[in-house]
Length: 148
Image (cartoon, rainbow, N blue to C red):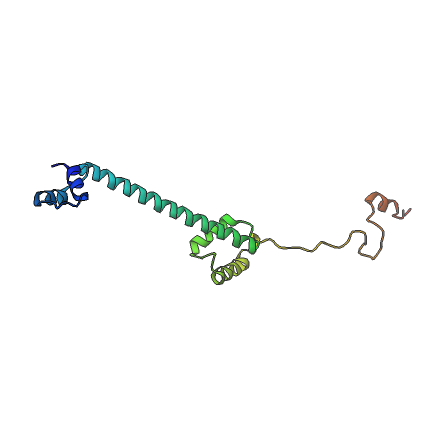
């Protein structure tokens, strides 16, 4: 029985006999090997899709961690990423991440940038003298000599 003849007949609106209907019900395109190949291709495509989804989620997580590190002036975003994964912290959750960063600031302050104000102006000495700092040689020259 030829599939193309049956399809032409059905497309033309002619009724199919029992033998033709039975053939269509049992027909498997290309046999079992083609179906097996198609299943393998489908499985491969699904696996690739899942892999890409996981990679996208990892990139989104990493981006969120780097944003969180910037907001809280954390100096090592890779370490912060490790800590967030370890503790199960969602960096997109303001409540969880804020609380976590405060605890981290208390336990590991060395990982946070701090802003310091500049020190005193060097043009004014501690004694209130407005002269610029002097060299050691000029200070030694002013030391009185004691003769015995």
